[in-house]
Image (cartoon, rainbow, N blue to C red; front, side, top):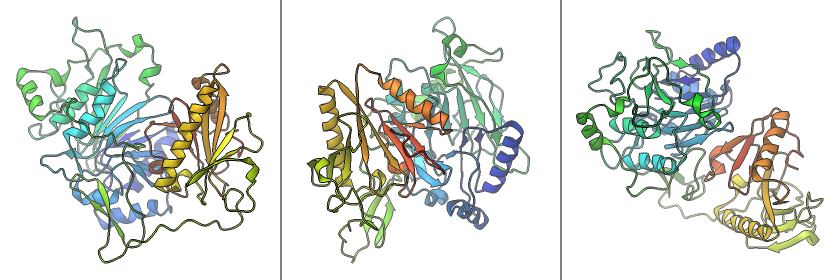
Length: 498
């Protein structure tokens, strides 16, 4: 399902979704473009019920960031995070890949008209950092879905006319983005109108090989008085799994590409477009990036998150309050894995660092099955301090090199459920026994048999953005860098990873 501007009308939206699902069956995702939050007291009261857990979204809901300064306050991070149970903010811009291989590119907010860009706006650097990694691959054919809040300027060329004032509608940069990413579906909002453009082709006839068509769909505001369409249901098979001949089939009503229409428009595009060769920022995306350090100081008393001009937060301490040293978390009772505990079976310990230690697994799956554990008491990876994370990464790297020298690849997994102390399981598997893809498939198949959906998340993902501290989850990291994640709902088989 895709949805236009919600503007805080969460109950109306989710009631409508439940009605549709009763008639047609369950949908996998709800993708919301445009302005999700409202500014009225009623809208804020509705949101508080979902934020507090009094109400829960009936479907996995993914939303874009603020499209106005007034709603920026609802987004604690520019990098994407879970805002409430089943409601996830994708981030400033990035690519989200589902377990099925469905690829969703997204850009939050409006095009910046000044520098520094306000927090609710995107810049040409954001778009370049999104496009460059995708289009640099020789295998790139396009993305399955593109989510933007603004319309692409000129999308109506060669097609049916929308019921909006086209003189002031849309962004040239979004048009350029859509032209480069070639989405099969492109959703947008903000104009209060419903508009389904005729499908357009992404190739020049007789000059280029046939490519898939793109469909642009703009959606209206939830519960609008004119009863314009604000929800769009569709079924899509990921591009990567489709037969190429099926993918490039051209419908009878296909038109020319609206973004390649005339010399004048090309000139306009060059003025408003973006370059993919300019100096790029590190990619920050949902579910998605560890290319910069997350946050700076501890959250809590005396600390506030301030916004830099471009919308990225920075931590500052209130003046006049001395910096407090980080208190080491303490176990609530006896712990078998805190190194200082008398319960630790020290004959299994192999190496002790400053913040972590390495131990043989008791009852290991293979002879070299090991555990990486924090010396102090931490329940999960998402609760680790930065210095512990750094040392844990060093241990992981060293173990991968060791296993490689033995002709083995390793699988890492963590179960943050009914466990008091973090245990990162590292299991080596002989290279000649199975491929990484075999291991991945085994996890997927076992998960499906248990009626669980393992999500695949981008390789440079900060797990903290998906699983805030206290969230029960199961997490797998393969030797290829691929990562699988499942948010544990109720019952979870404790031996699933093994």
